[in-house]
Length: 409
Image 1 (cartoon, rainbow, N blue to C red):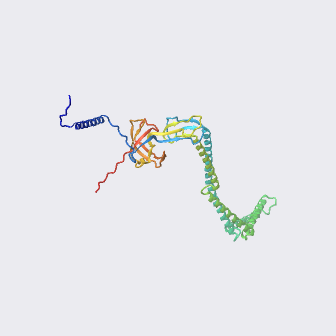
Image 2: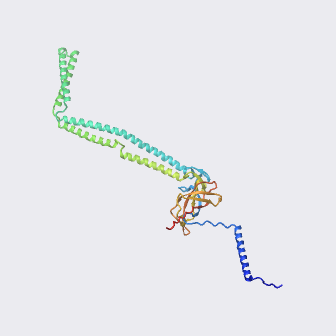
Image 3: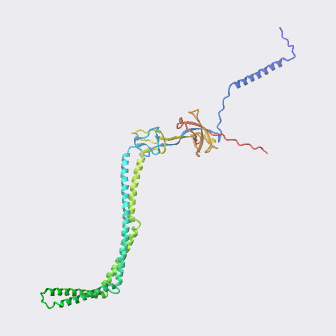
């Protein structure tokens, strides 16, 4: 049958409408397809300044790589890897400690000996000071007596008191002679061999001899001094003056301390002994590796009998953890400062996210492949037993709030 278009609607318009409907239907199907499949979440871009994210690594709150100060063969390992230690605990020792301990004992003995010598010197100096003070007093008295005796020679050989004493002795001697003569008068007519007469005569002779000696003494005392007497008196005064001056100098040196030369020598000997003991202890300390703080021995690669190498022992205080960024570039560091709160996630522990606070921003950048990289240290606000040293983390810093635009007037 032959088709005849009896409608007034043009065929061209019919096909145009059909194409439009098919196009709309296609759009509808596309929209439905979009609704049925979730679109992927775009990655958060790293923005400059606050809002940056950076790779980091886990580190203990305190950590250190330890090495012996001396070179030698490992003799003993006291703290193996994984052990908890307190500050000052020995970790390992090198050969030679027994020899050094013996040297320390000998040095300590020298210190005690030299200290005793110094103490004895100081103690003896107190006695010497007292003796010197007494010597000054005696020398002063001797000078006073010498000067008085020399002054008396200007008038007579003896002083007035001595002269009066001699005169009194003469008076008594003369009276003794009178009494002896009277007694002898009663027996003088007896024969020479008579005992009474002999005793009376002997008593009379002794009394006369004593009287005559006292007379000579009085004559000498009342006479003027000779040139020799004056010279001897002057010499005595000079000697007394020199002795007093020497005693005063000695006392000045000893009244507050020992003789400066002796004291300097004793102190130098003690100082040298202390230095020897300190050197021995320092040598022993070089042969011992000790914990610088409380923590855990994370790495201990020392082997008994082998030469110790630097960096074989690592200690960390794992009671708290920090993270340090490793790739924070200079375009990201602006705006990051101490006290800023951050979020820290861990590659090895996907379900763990910990709050952190920026502890410090290192002010010196390190060039890495042409970019300046800055280290930011973050304190973790909680711990987790799964955390280990050097684990890889990601730190996300808060996004900066854009400043509000002020409406134009």
